[in-house]
Amino acid sequence: MTKIIAILNHKGGVGKTTTTINLAAALQQKKKSVLAIDMDGQANLTESFGLSIEEEKTVYGAMKGEYPLPLVKAENGISIVPACLDL
Image: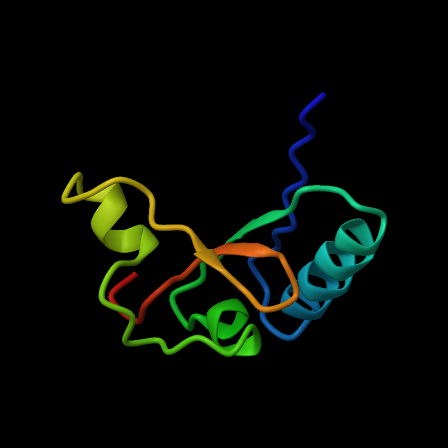
């Protein structure tokens, strides 16, 4: 069964990115399939997974209908949809 977990808070500096990274890693260690979607205009989650904020395809372009949601597989097995500063 698929479960969706959303971590959000309007205020900055409350640990959203850190919580997301650690939760994704813990679930991946439990052999769960994990997809982390970065919807933050600062793209901190994207950078935390070692991706560039200048990725060619991001969630922004997918939201505009330019292409399907781009999935990038990290070395640790977690899939990420990168964000960009255009958000």
